[in-house]
Length: 171
Image (cartoon, rainbow, N blue to C red; front, top):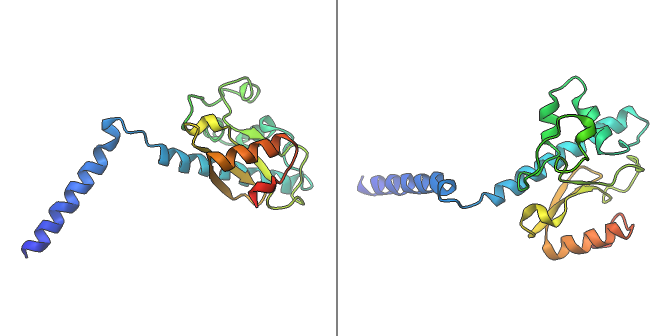
């Protein structure tokens, strides 16, 4: 019976320490990466839904995606999907302010693409500045999201900026 008491005491201490970690100023970066990836996946799913209603064409830009997502929905909730929690960016107040600076944490690449593209084509990604320079999330055409470390993320971004999509290093 004493062993069970000690085990319960140890579990209670672990839970207490875990709940206090944010209070000690330790950044929840891991949680931010997961939340960021989840938001990108939501954006990807919205892009596919848009494409299903527009002959397979993805929205021409991030503003068109935000407009689509916010039609008949909570605008602030839709705008929040465009903001990585690791940044100081804030949700846009309206569609036109999305790309005015500080309201969109991601780079949109899907403008000329359709759902017929290869599943390993990158639709959106984030700059390396979003997660303390440790890497970034990439949204692919099949709506999966990968967080890649700094070295691979830098290489993929260089390839994307050179017009290689899908980036060879993503395979």
